Length: 273
Image (cartoon, rainbow, N blue to C red):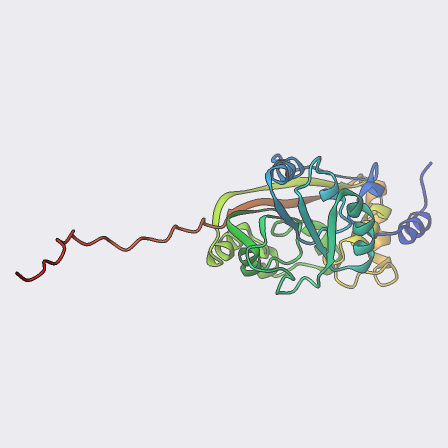
């Protein structure tokens, strides 16, 4: 039975968007996953770490999926609803959640962690990541790439300038990481198919991922939402391309101090005859 536009809108407006769990979209939207498997890679790194930091953990859902956490596990988050959810989820696992405004400096001392991870960070403060990493430590992150889901963005905002379409490019991430003194060990990117099967899925997505269409509200965009609803009903799912890239960087190990060169052996001074 086809649900009306008003019913779909009311449903999508009423559901909570706290946390970083997108299970409400099951059956209503699909997103192709990157081939590298961030959850698996993160879990492998965490299992071998002694002290780790998850930056911008959201509701803690991704971190909580790791089978084994290191002896010292810290996560940061800025948005109060996410802080509460992450605390409830991660504290029983032995992880500490720290409120952080996502602005430098990170509230940790120099060389505090041998692993820093982050999935889909909104901002990346490379100098701070380099500072809190121990020599030989690793940063692993899956990030949103350039012009991700811009078919949807431009449907509501119109054509975007080239600088907006190129923002969050993996080449820029490489340059910034290297400028902070990190060595890139892995950098991969993919363009992935995303489908929205009803207008409720679109509304929920834009309410949750607030930076896609800044200031999005159903009231302000109701006409365009109605047109998109009619289009999906007539033509099928709205298709967009999601871009993702994986970046792994290493802080160079500290070189051992060089010993001063030894001079030629000297004969002991002789007493005068």
